[in-house]
Image (cartoon, rainbow, N blue to C red; front, side):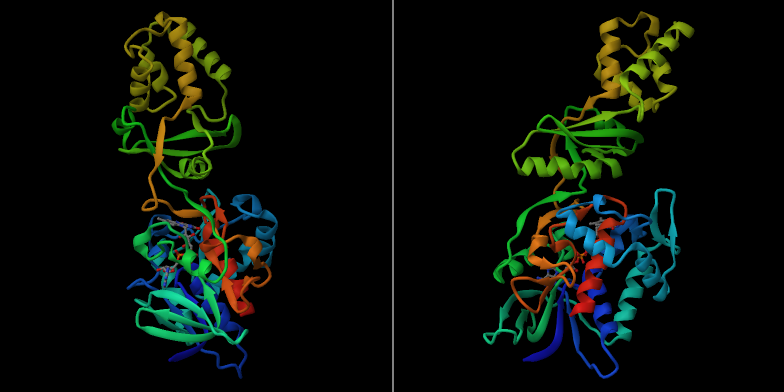
Length: 414
Ligand code: FDA
C-alpha cells in the first residue's frame, strides 16, 4: 500500500492552499511527502468558473460580519491570515491582484486560469503529488491511536499520519463537490449541521413578469424579513432572468431565504426599486411630476427614473394604463404603484438548487476544530478546511478568503 506523510482530499482552493503551505512549512531536512487526491478528472473547476471566469480572489476589507457561522471562531481564523497576506502570497506566486470599485480583488490578467495555474505550479515546485481522478470513498483510522489513516480511493489506498479534508460543500456537484465529504467527516465522528444552498438565484412564480425582463439588470434595495423580523437589507444589482431573479444582491439575500425554508420559517424578500429612498420621498417626486407635467403619461414619467422595460411591466402588473396622463391616476392606483416600487414582494417559489448555488451554508461545526490549526478536536491528525466547514461568506471574494486562510492554518500546522 502506498504511504504518504500528508494526504489532502480535495484539490480545490482550500486543498491547494493547504498543500502549498504544508510544503513550504517543511524544513530543509524534512522530506515529507504530500499527496493531493481529487475525484475530478481535471482539478480546479470552481476556481475556473469563479467570478465569471475572472476569479474574485478576495476582498479589500474582510470582516467576520461578512460571514455566517460562529463569528468568534471566524474572527480568529481571519485574523491569523488577513487580506494583506493573501495579496502578498499571490504576488509571491506571480499573481498580481487589482482592486475593483466594489472592493473585490481580481488577478490583473482578468482570468481565473492565472490563479489556478499559479497554485498548481507552486505545488509542483514543492513536490506535491496531485492525483486527479482519485475519488476517496472511505477513510479508516489505524487501530493504534495516533498512527494515522488509510485513505481508500478509486485506484487503491494510501496510508498517512495526517489527513486534510478539503472536499468542499454541495454546490455545483458536477465539479466534484457533491457533499460526499460530509459523509467522510461523519464516518470519523463529526457532526454536520443541515446544509442549504447559499448565494443562489431565486425562482419566481411563473405568473410574474420576470421572463419579459430577462437580461435586464437594475439597482435595488432588497430587504429580507424572516418571521416578521428584518434580517438583512442591502443595495446592489438585481438581474431579471427567465426563471426569476439573480445578481449579487439577490445571491446575498438568498442565504437568509434558504436557511429560513430549511428551518420551516416564513421568509419574504422585498425590493425597493428606488434604493436609498423611502416611499414618502418617491411620493413627493411623483406629486412634483404631476404638478409640473400633468399631461405626461405614467409610463414616460416613471421611465425617467426606472428602466423603461421594467416600468412597462410594473404598471401593467399594477393594473394601470401606462399611456394615461399622470394627473388622471386615481389615488388608490397611485398608492398601489408607489408601494410596488418601494416594497415589492417577490413571489419566490424556490431557490435554483445546488447546480446553481455558489456556496453551501451549514457543514462541520466550527466548534469541532481547533481554530489555531484547523485540526479536528475529535480525531487527532485530521484537519478540515474550506467550505466543508459550517461557515459561508457573502458574495465578493469572502469564500475564497476563507478557503485560503483555513488552508494556510492547516498547512502550517500539519
Ligand atoms: P471546492 O469545492 O472548491 O473543492 C473541493 C474539491 O474536493 C473538489 O475539487 C472536488 O472534486 C473534491 N472532492 C470532493 N469530494 C471528494 C472525494 N470524495 N474524493 C476526492 N475529491 C473530492 N468565491 C469567491 O470568493 N469568489 C468568487 O468569485 C467565487 N465565484 C464562484 C462562482 C461559482 C459559479 C461558484 C460555484 C462558486 C464561487 N465561489 C466564489 C465560491 C468558491 O468557489 C468556494 O467557496 C471555494 O471554491 C471553496 O473551496 P473548497 O476548496 O473548500 O471547495
